Length: 274
Image (cartoon, rainbow, N blue to C red; front, side):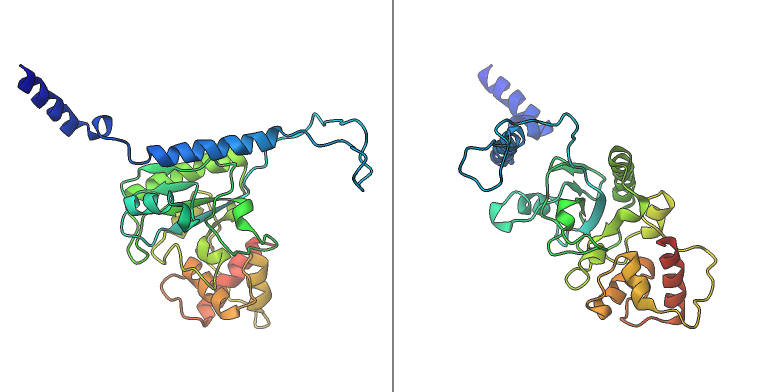
């Protein structure tokens, strides 16, 4: 009877491993909760009043405003993981020594891992710049797509991404133009998401901008440098900015030289940002 019961338990565990085997991320989830609790204490902190030993001339009594809210993200930055599997990425994002993270990881089969509260600051963009924003980590949500950096993106993955982006746009009123890629905000360092990424499809759904089907020829006096800057690109390294623009909008050719077609596309996109 005992052996029969043991076989039954083993069979159940074989069918539903997650309910019988120890959860791999139990320890790191505990670390997450502890750190979130520490942040909650900071949010509850009441500003100090004048203790007679400061130079700010603080009032003796604290008066708290009744009009405030949580800070909210204003950008979404999309990445590819450049790793071999979603499991490898989850492991990377739960190791303290890596110091990297993202709010969401989307697996090839469309499974979404929500790894960080949207209001917290993830370490996904690094040194970055987009327009006047110089710290994208502080104002954005980072989404990592399981992709080694060279392959097309799975249709199931993109379908899940579109649903996720829809929720984020609605929840935080993120402008269509503020759905961008890691390469856009860090053109010197990063190529992600790769040129297989369907930016046009996203733009058609309201996530990012794209050029029109019929575009006019750019004027003879059109200067691409201020146009790239107005879109948001950091032109401090013009070659990198051109490659990043072409990786996003041209894709079939990412050489660091603007052809007439590239200039026409740039002119069309730039006018959408005016």
